[in-house]
Length: 112
Image 1: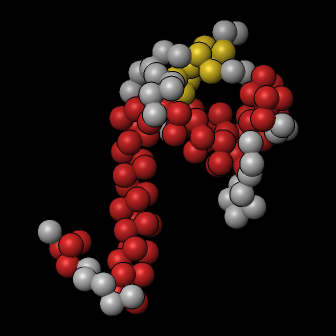
Image 2: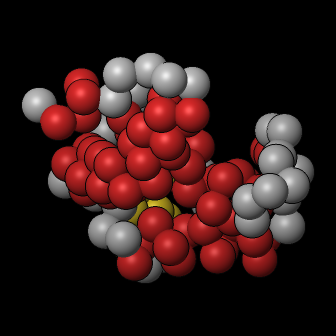
Image 3: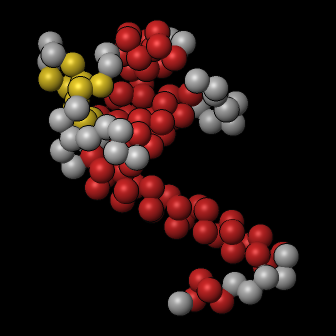
């Protein structure tokens, strides 16, 4: 996995898992690799993986069955969609709107 230096690695990992859920590669009830398995697979320290899993758990996207492993929550798709839509509307749309204005493009499409 290639990491971006602009964003913490654990957040990049949560993004990858969230994207896999959005793409349908992971669905509610699916088991995901353990912290150590996934860390070894992508070349990341288990502490970094644990931090990513803790965030995903806190966000309600995955859950831990003690002694069995981590699983995708049944409502993970809806949770990820809601979070990604909110982030898009709050961060990306304003940046797009600003860039369009700088380029002299019509921003009225955002007023519909």
